[in-house]
Image (tube, rainbow, N blue to C red):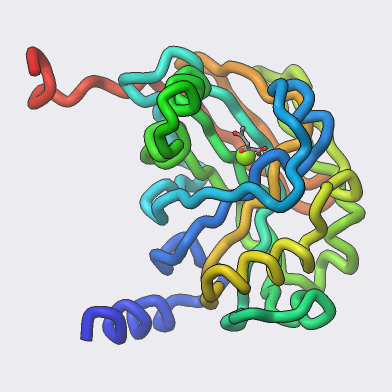
Length: 236
Ligand SMILES: CC(=O)CC(=O)C(=O)O
Ligand SMILES: [Mg+2]
């Protein structure tokens, strides 16, 4: 009953407001060779991916909040691919039929926390899933982007260019990613796939301003603020 209620709730909102659907955010990692290299990581033989909770979405007008436990918050600019039709074990040559459109996204990462999680063999949830860790632009219908592998994504901090990448440099293409993931779990309408960050990731501090976009398509702007430790945890 809860699932059908959620589906009805989600269906009552247009897909262009996907961030209100409560669906999965599937994030692909190390999908650009230069970024894998700057992180000191080997190139993946198959896609590496992880999930963010849908409560991680944040839209322009609200800030990106650096988690109280983070001392090194990184920006990662990424192309998001929105699923418009359920995809279960789909072949690559049918994958793009399941795409409704795109969005410019940030995979905000508590980098120090991520390093600690890696060392301890822990999941990256604390590093990747905190509130406001997934800023997203307006929705871009697929008709406006003839070829998503011919886009330039960029990011500036306080007006200074930090990242600029071509989606043609992805290691695993969008059809490959959709097919691969859909053979592991079903992708539902309203799910969003973040397709990985190009090189140039870096730190942001409270009061910094981030601007990012898909060149000549869409852009967005966010302030960074410092989060506060929950009182209930003090002295634990
Ligand atoms: C090491 C990472 O955080 C991988 C990632 O998110 C990426 O975009 O690459
Ligand atoms: Mg990422």
